[in-house]
Image (cartoon, rainbow, N blue to C red; front, side, top):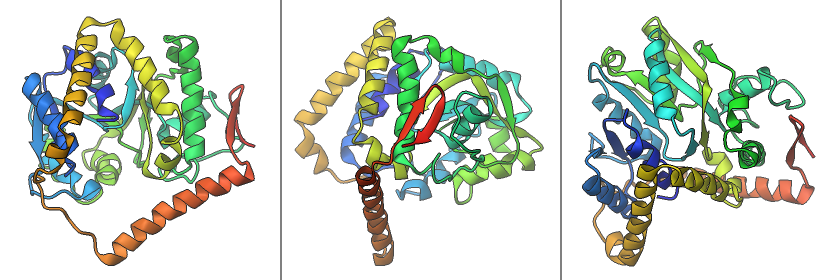
Length: 335
């Protein structure tokens, strides 16, 4: 709910989106109740349940691609923490998708995406003080919350001065070879996914961005003339949750929704649903989840707890040492 409230108005107000499938890959009953209310109110919304009846985070997401193989259909996968889009994102991206049939996946520019940050570097929008390669798990571009925060502040600063100024960050279409990249917002033809029967083994990001395209004799494509914003990767979330980034994107979205009657209606309906859910929260949270609660083995729990502790220590270390990233006239540097 925290992030998806900003996605719904874009999707439901767009005439080019025929159906909005929500992949229910959670056991959080508050979120599920929210999804159910949206599906009851809007015929475009459909809940899609995990086909194997399990919920295990990113380990169970790959099964949903089995549902994405219809012919004459363009599928768009949007991460639930996409927090801003251009007002005509779907129209632009569908046109781009149709024009680039030689690509398996197409994606817009994504603020806070390692490949997007890499392209801002090579296109001359930002200078990181040294060359940083197109590594999807780069310790700065993917991992550092402080870097993600300053990246968001850079983009938000541009947008808050002039809501139309994002266009100055356009750089045209860019083909992507077999590099893995973060699939925060990607599109494919159902007929292409059908060639692999929707079977995505293991890590969906690795398989879809690096394996399928060469398997089909295709490439992938970035549309540098369309921008969306992605809130956070896991290692960044501890820092970004303490920042004002989400609140500022929320204000941008609300201002945009006010200019579109249909978007504004959806936004208001969502706020009413949130109040309704809050009023019934104890009752909702007492309901039985749709999937079994999977208990992690002891060592996996220990590893997960250690990672949380590690993030906190990194944050505290950077705070105490005064290390932070800043943008000054297009130069990002550690201070």
